Image (cartoon, rainbow, N blue to C red; front, side, top):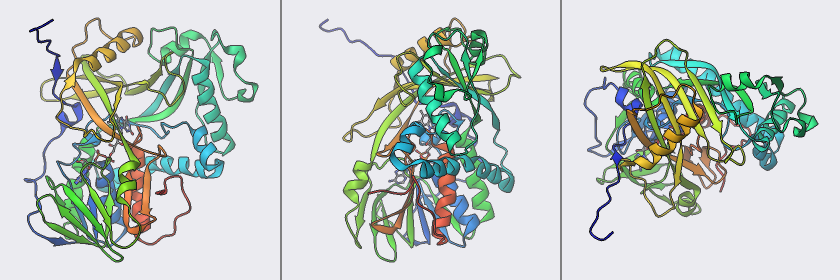
Length: 463
Ligand SMILES: Cc1cc2nc3c(=O)[nH]c(=O)nc-3n(C[C@H](O)[C@H](O)[C@H](O)COP(=O)(O)OP(=O)(O)OC[C@H]3O[C@@H](n4cnc5c(N)ncnc54)[C@H](O)[C@@H]3O)c2cc1C
């Protein structure tokens, strides 16, 4: 209608994780002069902070961490905060592309992230709440279930321990489950599947168990960087609000230029930037990297919303739901976590849900402060009311947020030196699931830096 302005309801991008951040550090440093270091780390999300942690712990190198914004305000402060060790890309596809041995090694590498996280906790005495439990994923179609059973079948073949799968005795596709998966699942009453998945939707016919955890990864990073700045005060500097515009790579050193024209000279640079926005790479000692780097990552924006239920004392939980519209395990799905949550105003269980996604084409820049439109909340609300047994009739969402996920071409995290210039290393590419891979990535980067020869891996940086 002419002259009528339709206003879309929108919210600020505000996550519960950033809301809970307590600023324990002194005022933030911005780089104001040229400096020298051994290792320059670009990006202070969980990948950058964990990379700094392991380099400081396992080598004698000096480290400079530079962040365009503030520590942990990227994806690390805008995720679902669910710790899982699976890949978003089906394990069977990884086996198809790399073979069973390499795929299995990759899976073991990510699984080792659990132990590394425990090490970080015990060494640095971090207090940020971190829960571990068995969580679930619900399948509604035979195709989804078969895709997951194939992943389990291959993991089992590679001697990786696998967790339980419960299939409803009343599943309409029971007779069509291939014989080769016998022994990988257990038949149970349909009621049990629905109970495990905390759902009222009888469309779910199977529940897959896996080890999961809940963590506010932003609070974790803030606490860890405070510890590093104290413990290694002579070897680490952190500069926030210091975007890097250009990285020049030479045979024996690297040179980083900030947007304000300051220079960081280092031996090596580790990009922990998640995406690649506004960063130029100039390889002065080998083939061009810039173009392939910019083609390398695709941006996907994930949308989430959360409410606080007044109930307390229940255990943390994390459940993924694959609705009927989802064709295989790699398609979009909804993911829910429940955890105890408190701030100065209220406490209870925080129920947070994600699922809606938008892919950015290479010409569109992700803007963190862009509003969150109501349509994403509506999708989440519809999902919750149809599926989640504990969802109230009217849900008052307290938090709405979005975050950027960088997808590499291989859909796997890139960890290690670039083949065209070994002074450039990556620990980037969240590919949907990035907490454990970032921690493992940091550990592995420290190994590369100490000169340890690492076996071939699915996470090697390809060209
Ligand atoms: C909605 C959503 C839900 C998710 N849920 C989960 C989940 O449940 N479980 C899970 O494991 N993973 C999840 N992830 C992924 C996970 O959050 C990320 O993989 C992880 O936080 C990535 O950490 P990072 O350090 O690589 O990236 P980020 O946290 O994004 O950090 C990168 C940092 O680099 C900085 N930077 C970029 N360019 C420059 C530059 N040129 N100069 C200086 N600094 C720069 C950015 O400002 C940013 O702070 C989710 C992600 C999203 C968006």
